[in-house]
Length: 129
Image 1: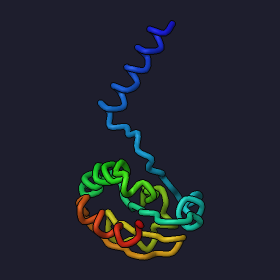
Image 2: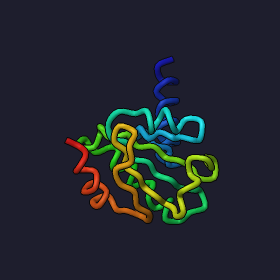
Image 3: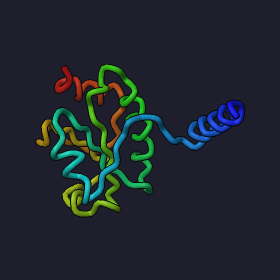
């Protein structure tokens, strides 16, 4: 029985790594959950407005994964919003990827375009103590 459980666990772990599924604690929000996940959150929230068809958005995703695993930035909540599925909260987003830093539900900074991990850490370090 234990061998079967270990084998099943091994297969699951292999699948996660092979298919890009992450263990990172990155949330996803849509029109219904944006208020709860972002606006009502205490502390720092980094929101990534993105779409499946967007090349720079695909390049941004691993950067967010890397950031989410950095112990210095563990307090930053990362939320991804697919602009095609969250039209209401994305209506003022004119370019993707757009990254927005919220603090206690209030916008602190917003910018568009791919951002490497060092630049992202630099921007967030103003808010993470």
